[in-house]
Length: 281
Image (cartoon, rainbow, N blue to C red; front, side, top):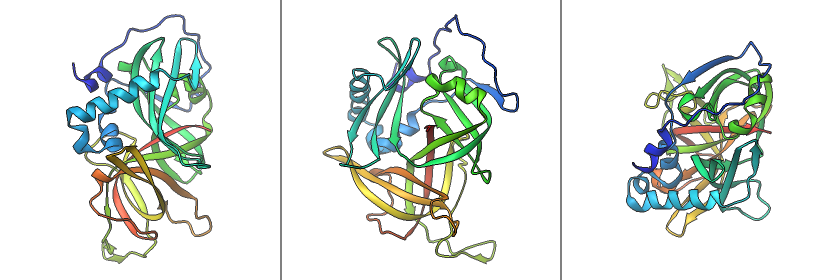
């Protein structure tokens, strides 16, 4: 069994769960698929991901994560994490989280810490039944204005809060899957401004957390995963709201292997695909 086949296996249901007063305005959907292979490809680069060394690198950090003190825990469930690198006095850090029951690793996924927070209204929760409903994708709206979905990196611990509170403050970040410079100048005959930004559901990965985007690069900083594997944490504006520069401007990891351009420049318009993740602030 390969590393990521492991993430797709079914786990035994656990008894003794108490009933919860849920918000009936939230739609709950059970899905029996969903995994983190593409997300790890975003983390270490798809070229590296498809090699034995890449698989060993991910497995190594899964083990390192599992050995750390839990950062979140409830009953028998715990979330652990390990960090590759964090700049001094920075609010951003990149690593791997593991979901565990005792010493058993149930799942693992890339994690990009951020303090960027938006008010969010939940409309749908897609629980992963093959993961004992311990992982989920959340779909709804940000700032009562724009729609988006994100993978809840804290769902196993905070699922009761997601189910019973329609309105939450959510920390949003992203893992980039591909990045290029955007040369798009018009849409349907309408000229685009230099500050044009937008995103839409990705057509290749039919899940509510993957999006294609055109955005403005606000800032970037280097980040190292290993000595030979690195990338950038970029700040990208995905909605241009002149009255509020941070209306929807998120931190995103992009591995150099997944870049189709050789360099970045502040203010440039970029395009690509990303995976949103989030957690309760």
